[in-house]
Length: 276
Image (cartoon, rainbow, N blue to C red):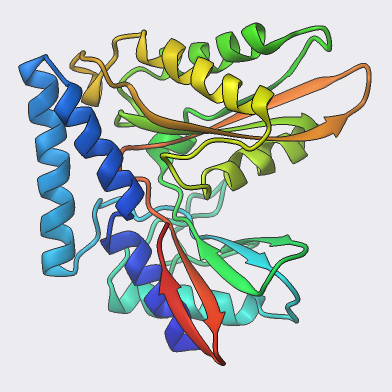
């Protein structure tokens, strides 16, 4: 299991998932601005070279975040050991520090790191998503007025991206969480980032909201790496939960163009790393 977890981390940081590659290729095919098209070509070349050489897609290998589905025992020590080994073997850049002293632990682990979320139900699996600081620093959450509709939610998300500008290395991928409580909305926004691009919510209202947010964000004209162009966002995924009648929490998690993630699934008694 430990070797499988190390391979999970390696795959996530080295190989761009096929759905993200397809979204970048589609953006390049539609781009009319040469400078924006150049950035997209460089991103695709970067991804191809990283996979060929077996090195991380980005020097910021992020905060290690795991999502456990199904029934698990006490696996947090095993996940931490996998992060330590991956830090040395892949390698990953050590970037986890104490929040006040800023002392680096040197192995990408620490108090409550790696971050572990347990998601009830479903077959046993472990998803890994490294969260780089450039995109995480631009994420946001807010309690919107309970009377706010889809238009105000889309406007809030678009304003988050507008204020972020080029900082999260666009074109970005957006995970949006709506409802629950504020911390639940934030978790939903992270879970939404695990959903494949090129598909949409099965709930019609949420699917329409995903399309609306994508239109509004791409109309900002920020473009690849902030150089302008048609594509500021590769995709939007939304998850929701019921909430209190007097509240409407909304959270937005941004990922850069190198939207890295992978999942370790159990099949026929063995473990296999897959990407959406």
